[in-house]
Amino acid sequence: MARQARPLAEHYGDLVRVSLMEARPAGLQTRQLVSATRLTKSQVARGVRHLRDVGAAEHLTPIIWRRRDGYMFSEDPADWIEYEKKQFQQILGRLTRMITGTLDPHLARYPDDEWAQLAAAQLTGVRATLAQLTR
Image (cartoon, rainbow, N blue to C red; front, top):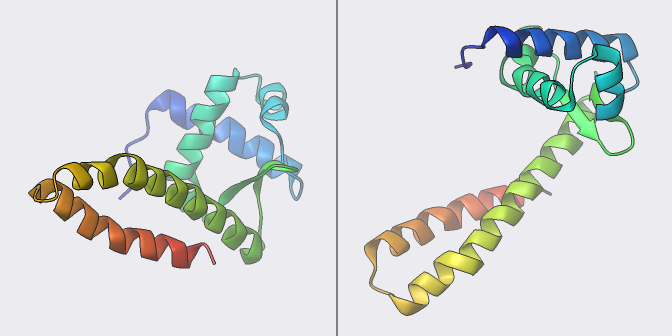
């Protein structure tokens, strides 16, 4: 279910989408989007978030980001998969750091803590799933 868009976020998203469509098949870096849309950097970021939350699903065009190209709409499913894998890799890294830096020490100090046991059991599956998705 898509979130309800606020009018400004929708407007920023529309400006970003039009600029990216005009740049196709190339992408635009954030600074280029700022110039093309005449929005501030934070407004561009809000527009990109809107596109990810609502606009991409409405227009059936995934928005991806690559270091060399910036934000872009790609028609190639291989580009989407590459982007998705990198996103899952980042989530896996954050989750792993949370487990090793917080949850594992919690369990080491209080091995009978029900909350920590539940969290560890649930996150083991999530971690394994994310690891598979990054391959």
